[in-house]
Structure formats: C-alpha cells, structure tokens
Image: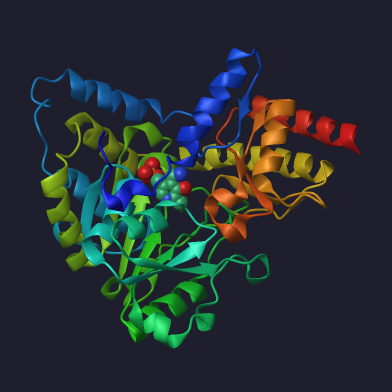
Length: 391
Ligand code: PMP
C-alpha cells in the first residue's frame, strides 16, 4: 500500500469531480439531467477566434514548446487589453504572466508566498481554491464572512488588527462567485489602503469582470492608484471569451509576485500550445462588441431564473454581474446538500449546494447561467412544479 503525503491526506476530490459520478448514475437510470451547477459557459467563442486557432495549428512552425509564462505577443495583448478596458498600464515583460487557466495561478500563488504557519484571509463563501491552496502550503486560514446585509463585501474593519498584521494574503473576488455581488471602487480603495497599512498582498480574482448586466461595467482593482504595490490580479479568457476549456488565464500587477509565479511555473509546467496563444491574442485585442450581445443572453437567462426561483419560494437578489444566481433556500430548509440532492433526484435539475463555498454559504444554493436558455427555462418549470406539488 502507498500512503499519500501528509499535506494531501485530508483532501477530498473537488465537488464537481464527485458530482459527475452521481449524475452519470442518474443518467444511466434514464433521467434527463439539466445541469445548472457548474460555471462552464455553453456558448462558443467567435469564429474569428476559432479560425485563428485552426490557421495557426495548420502552420508547420507552431508545434514546439512556447516560452514559459506566455509568448511576448500574448503578454503584450494582455497589457493592451488592460490599457483598453481599464486604462491600466502594465509592463508586458514584468507585470503580466500567462497561466494555465486562472485556477492554476490562484493555487500556485499560495505556494510561492506562504510558509507553513503563515496566515491568509479568505472569504466565506468563496471559490474553494483560495482555501485549498493555502492549506496545501501549510498556512493557517482566517475565514471572513461575506454577508448579505453587507452586499457580500467583507467588513475589513471587523478583522482584528493582530490578525491583519500577521496575514500575508487577502483574497478578494468581484464580480463574485458564488453570490454575484459586485464591489464599488470605494471598496477597492479601502482594500488597497488596508493592504498598505498591514503589509498584505491582495490577490484579486476577476474572471467575471466582463460579464455584467443592466449597463454595469466592473472595474479592475488595479485602477486604484498605488494598487500595483500591493496587488496581484487574476483574470481569464474562460468566461470573458467563452474559452473555459482552452485553459488560458493571466496574472497581472505586482512585478515581484509575477516573478515568483513565473520562476515557480518554469520548474513545473511548459506553457501552452502556440495556436492557443494566437487565438487568445485575437480574443483580447480583436472586436469586443460581441461580448455585449453574449451578456444579453446571460441577462435573459438570469431573469428566467429569478422569476422561476421566486415562484418556487426561494429568496433571490438580482445579480448585476457574473454568471450565477445565489438563492436562499425556502423557509424551513436549512441543509443545502440535502435540498439540492432532493431537487436533483426528484426533478433532474442539478444545482450547487451553498455549503460547497463555505459555512456561510449554508442555507443557499447556486444556479449557473452557462446552459442553453431553453434548458434553463425547462429547469425552472420543473422546479416550480416540484415545489408546488409539495406545498
Ligand atoms: N475564479 C473563480 C471565482 C471562478 O469561478 C473560476 C471558475 N469557475 C476560476 C477562478 C477559474 O477559472 P479558469 O481557471 O478557467 O480561468
């Protein structure tokens, strides 16, 4: 027998890895499953982006290794995108880095910054990788709650000074998964000031920054003057350009931290397929107007979900951004895993239990908008009928 290393012995498979097994069983029993659980966009990137990949792959000189951390052209495209989209100036060589999806960088940031016994500040509910990466690094995690009454923003003042002084990383994520909440600029300003005061690195995870509704436009935290001194921002082509399976993301901001990640990655991975970079450049620097039309589709789905869930007795606020609806379970329902399991088994509709994102996610479930509109419509009809049949 082989024992796992101590640092991974306590780990369970990622929630969506275990869910897949359960869904396969139900499917085998003939159930028509509608997945509105995972945040994987169903729509494709534009033809222009896909054609760039194909044309590049047909060349004879695009099949070797590419530079670790991204080609010069890709890193320039990332800088050009930040300039155009946020009016943030980045040095492509020192302040940008290509990632194998932002998840890779989020996980590895903890490995390059944290020593065993160090402390990190992690939101609850939150994307599970912040906590998992910290724990693998042997760090201690201080969870701070994201509460509905605070608009799912952290109350930085409530973090004790001795905790803040010990902490090395503050994790933030706006537009937020799973709550769909957004951060106003004044919150980012407060966070940057907090980070300066306590000498903390802000890790801002911003993959939903280009999925906004009702005319809202999400900022980058790097727009705050002085942010670069204390901030690394993670971004991704996964959601912005419907390229989740392509595994292309980026870390931008503080040059020292970019360098640590780059050095670490140079020992660990060997970058991307050149056509993926070429298509990524096209996505970042080409026509952006299609994103508005795509966001209209998400907005329409969001509204279908809001109407459906409310009719089914769940309490939901209207999310201004991201691809999720965060819904409070109906009166009397407390256990999100039990509720989502029952819904799945009795209707075939698969949602994500809030507890997956932390203790403060208990009592909620998350619906993803990355599924065909007519299927979302059908999912809502089933859920409403199911709830009414129990009433
Ligand atoms: N951060 C958040 C908040 C996410 O929801 C996701 C994907 N669900 C990621 C990061 C990772 O995205 P990717 O690795 O595809 O860039």
